[in-house]
Image (cartoon, rainbow, N blue to C red; front, top):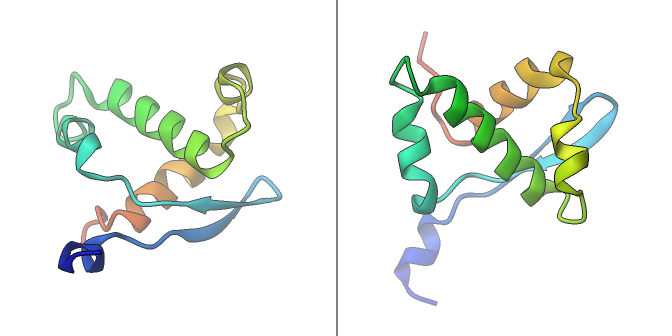
Length: 92
């Protein structure tokens, strides 16, 4: 592996809805979605896609149907975990 291997992010486990989800950082492949988080008109769709990709990475055998049926009550915890792992949270 090259020196770039040092730049590959590490995942972090979060307890969401009673299950441990290993939330892995997104990669350069998702940069457009990350940029879209800052655009009001695109924010909802971008976060929805980031959540979908993150859940599929965390539980690879989850079906698209299962992912689409995750309760909205978990949205805040999942989105906060994604922001935390990707260091996208604002410093206070």
